[in-house]
Structure formats: C-alpha cells, structure tokens
Length: 292
Image 1 (cartoon, rainbow, N blue to C red):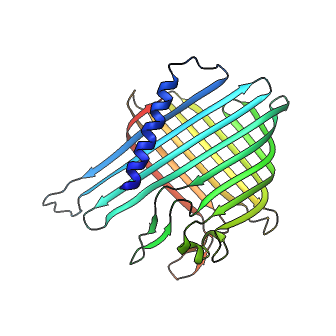
Image 2 (image 1 turned 30 degrees about the horizontal axis):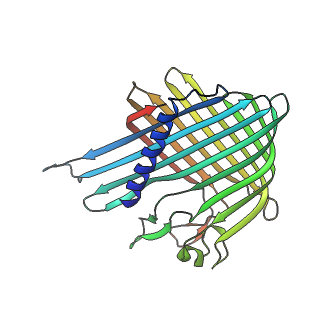
Image 3 (image 1 turned 90 degrees about the vertical axis):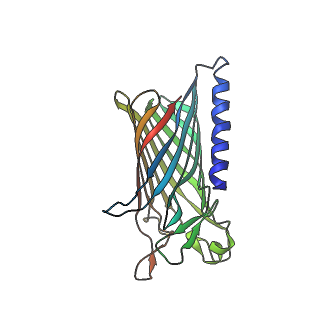
C-alpha cells in the first residue's frame, strides 16, 4: 500500500507539471501526448449459491511522450508507469501490475530520415514481487531487482511520424540486482553475490503509434538484444503492445500485452528445474481515463 501511495503522488505531481506547462507558449517543434487513468474492479457476494469470494482491485496507468524535431535534430522521450493490486478474502493482497519504463533517443540527421543517434533505456518495477504459486510465497523481485539499463550508439530511421526504428550496433546492457537475497541466488544472470551483470552487444528498437480507426490507437514497441560475447544467437526479446479505445472524454477501454524472452532469466518449473522461458502477460481494463 505504501508503494501505491508513492506512485499516486508521483503521478499527481507529473500531471500537475504537464497541466502547468500548457499556460506557456509551446515550441511547435515539440509534440506532446499521453494518457492517465485508473481501472477499478469489485465483487461483493452474499449467500451466493454458485460460490466465489469478495474481491476488490485497481490498476493505475500513466503514459507520456515528448518528441522534438527541428532542422537536423530529433529527440524522442517516453515514460510509462503502471501499478495494480487485487485483494480477496482468502488470498489477501496481490500485485497484478508493476512497471517503470523510460526511453530517450537523440539523433542528428545525416541524410533524409536517417539520423546518427544515441539511445538510453531504463526499465524496472516499483514494489516487491512474489511467486504466489509456491507455499509460502517466494520473493522474486523489487525495485532495481532487476533493473535494466541500455545505452548505445547507432542510427535511427524515422520515415513517418508514427514509426521509428533505432539500431544500436554498439550498445551496453546492464542488469542490476540490488537485493542481497536475489543477488546471492545469482538471479537474472548476475554471478552469486554480485549486483551487476554487464553485456556488450547490438540492440534494435522499433516503435509504432498509429490511430487505425477513430478513437482507436495502437502503440507497439519491440526491443531485440544480442550479446556479442556470449551466445549471440540467443536474442533477448521484449515486445509491448497497448491498444487504447476511447469511449468518450472520460472513459476508455485498453488492452495491454507484454512478451519477454531473456536467456539469462531462469523460470522455476513445476518439476523443480529452472530455465529460460517465454514470459507473457495480458491485461484488459475499462475505466476512467484522461488524454492530454
């Protein structure tokens, strides 16, 4: 609950700053856009013959983009935050969503639509995470455990306003495991007792945001990373898709999917073995949303 309060305060502060900026004349070279919302769900049962239990939950989302394009300069920034909890009578409170993502790409135009560029990506979560399938539940993540940072130099292709591709042929990816417990277990590819796993390789990021029908927008981002020094053919994949359907000024529906494959992340199986597996998450939300 403490984490959710901090998240809400950060969200409110950021929303206030974006609203305040509207009072100043904006440079036409900047393109701003985003949305914030909350999805709520609640179930209350009394003498219900079919069975079930009372439940309540929420999911808070915030997405914001700020892009600059003028003369030979291109600068694209994106921030994504999400946090969700669900509580039932028998299972208690469980985390259902947790995300903190920031990306920034700067490019200097070499030729039409092609830029010499530098990339920075950061990705982690806010709160502790657990494997609820085990008994007792197993602690598996927290803020900066893992935390991923990618920096790189390469080229950016921006042929249309709705699509951008950045190829960083020289890039560094750091996997941070701040937790001493997870570090001692050698989680997320770090050596037992270490807090950082460094990789040198190539990274490809492709982003697309397109309104294919009125009030229906899709955002898709795929990141591919290959470690040049170890198993270069085992490409790590992170693919996020957000489909947003605006009902009216205040309400919307959204579908979010996240697919991850990381050869260094070992997933515990039912037979007790651990190994890399395809990770997939899907969420559907209907609730209050403000677009800006």
